[in-house]
Every structure is written in structure tokens, then in C-alpha cells.
Length: 280
Image (tube, rainbow, N blue to C red; front, side):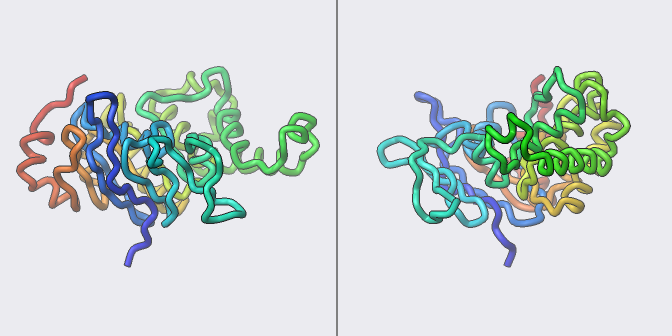
């Protein structure tokens, strides 16, 4: 039996009278590349936002590696299971903030690239490395933990080399071609040492050559970094080529799921998505 990494259970996300995600159930198993597809406004990014602690769900829960990390509190407030020394208890944090979710091992990229524009390629990676540092603010400010800082710099350089970005190490992040900016954003996510990587439309804005390169790149990092990948994507060629399984949303509701062959042959998917050009 496959090891479950992510489980979304009966998640509903409502904004006033609008139900963006309606009783969503899905699972992502270890080592898989799973895609979530659907037209604009289907609720895909909202689902990602619930998983990563941006929105408290109206109902339901999210499990990561078998542990509940997000749920709706009975009084309408969200609570987060404390996964530290007192395992099994709840802390007093009302919401699982995105940075806490990242520290648990879930990293994310965004449809609109969010690099640190005033920083170099290397500095973008190093900032992400600091998410994992053990020194406190006092020692970090006084640079007392030199060994840890040195190790992070070495790890950042190693990551740039593996992802073939070391030749642009000292360039400003926004000076890179679009395809390399996207690769840098993924590299920055990898610097947080995730076991689950969420990619929100990684091929958005890419030309056909860049998309082909990205397809191979995603498969390579899955294998090289022993990742599980959950991806939102409109580019159907990429989705069908690289996905182990696919979930399909329509107006917040799950209408189809299965392997690429199963989803491609589903009449509801054909009529609703694959035969319709996406809105710009």
C-alpha cells in the first residue's frame, strides 16, 4: 500500500455566499506527481491556500504524513495540531501560518513568480535556507553561529549547481529569462527541504520550449530530491505527460479523478475543459 503524504478531507471553503471549494476529498501518495486541473475560478488555488495555511477552511481538515495540520474549529476558529515535543496536543496558535506549514515540510510556488526582486539568485536561495536555521534571533544578529551560516551557504551553492543555476549565481533574480526565474522559484522552495512540493501553474507564461524543459525538470527534481509533487496546471500536454494521477474541479466540486488515460476519456472533462480554450 502506498504511503499517504497529503490528505484533504471534506474541505469546504466559503467566502460569504460563494462556495469556492465544496466538500473536497483527495489524497497524494509518496513519490507521486498529482495534478489538480479545472477552468479559471474552479477553486484550485483556493484549495492550495487552505492546505498551506493561507485560509482557514469553513469545514474539513488537512492531513500531512498522517497528522492533522489544518482543521475547522467547532467555534469557527481554526486550530493547528502541535507537532513538536508535545505531540498530539494543540498549541494556542489560532491559525497554521504559511511559514509554520513550510517548516513542517510543505513548500509552495505561485502562479505569479514571487522572487525577492532586489536580491541576487544566490541570496534568494540563502533566504530560504534561513527557514531551517536553529540559531535564535540574537545569535543570528551577532553572527555567532558561523558554522551554521557557512553550512547554509555551501548548501545554497550545491543546490544552484544541481539545478544548473550556478552560472547566474550573482545575477539579480529578475534579470533572468522567464524560464530560469521559474526554475529559481522552485529552487528556492527546495531550499526549505520539503517532502511535499506544491506547484501553482509552473508553466504559466512559458513558451513551448520552456514548457518542455520544465516538464523534464519537474520529473528530475521529483526523483533527485525524493519529492512528492502536487501541481495545479492549465497546460494539458504537461499534465498528461507527467502526472501519475489527476483530480478535476468544476465550480469547487470534484467531478473526475484517476490516471491521465481515465481523465482524458471522461466525457465531463472533455466537454468542460480539454475542448475549451482557457481564458487569459
